[in-house]
Image (tube, rainbow, N blue to C red):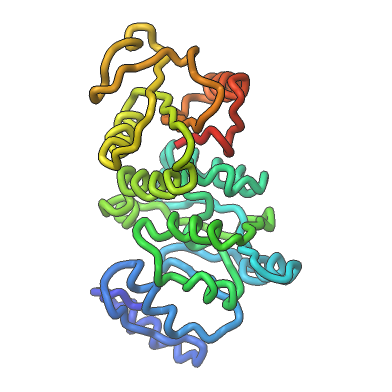
Length: 291
């Protein structure tokens, strides 16, 4: 897919003179419309995607195909990822890589779906018939990789890891995900909060955490006119108002409802928070979700 490139990439690809390679011009602009244009030309029995700046490990396609072939249908195959680049990979990206790979190793994709996008955008394969059943890329919105995972879940597909490295993900300053507004935190929060409210619209909602993410979630809930109670641990904040909501003591958290955990502290504090909400009757990934 040529998304209106301004360098020599199209000429380079055409110079290969390989009948298996077809260069198609994006009918629109940007990644999502490129995917939607490409969808019209898919002829094979399986679907995957690859970004131009990444690297595919040698046996990636064979490995993912073996995962799919072991099941009759409704399976998304994936594996682990590794960032690389000319510059040192930042702590944030290293942390996301480790989180993604742990998610794959534990097969805990849907339990962690509200935390981050649980499958790297160019690191999956599925049957064409399953792809068609969910209407492929045609119903997606930005951020499209995250939205796709929610569509898989809604369709009832299983995500299964091969437990092998299947994607080398290039990190560089000009990445779209670094520079485009559609891939910034607010876009991700808006997308997942919509799915979250659709899933839990009949439960009382409790928001835990009063820092930047907590404030953003509170703002979005208020914009959607969704009632919620807001809990804090800092004694200096309890009883105070934030966005016109009185902050309550976290130790008075009711035992029934749905919790949004808007904080993701270091491991020791995070485990303590998990233990606390479990003691209050919540199940991480079911009735309490890290955002």
